[in-house]
Amino acid sequence: MYDKITNVGKTAKYKLSQCQFDPNMQKHINYMLNWMREKSAKNISID
Image 1 (cartoon, rainbow, N blue to C red):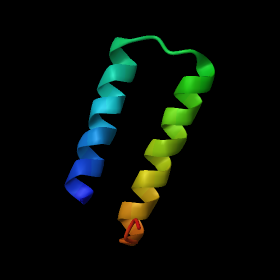
Image 2 (cartoon, rainbow, N blue to C red):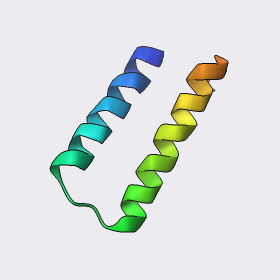
Image 3 (cartoon, one colour):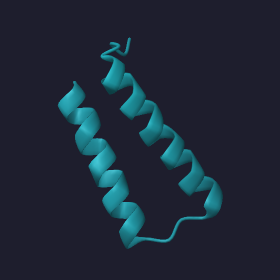
């Protein structure tokens, strides 16, 4: 599960560097990446 989350995060970062998103989209993706990082850091399972 966590491997998949990490891969999604890396893919999102890669795509962000390749494309230009509007600021709201970028803010949302950054929020999701931070949320996933916090979840995996605390080892809280995602239900």
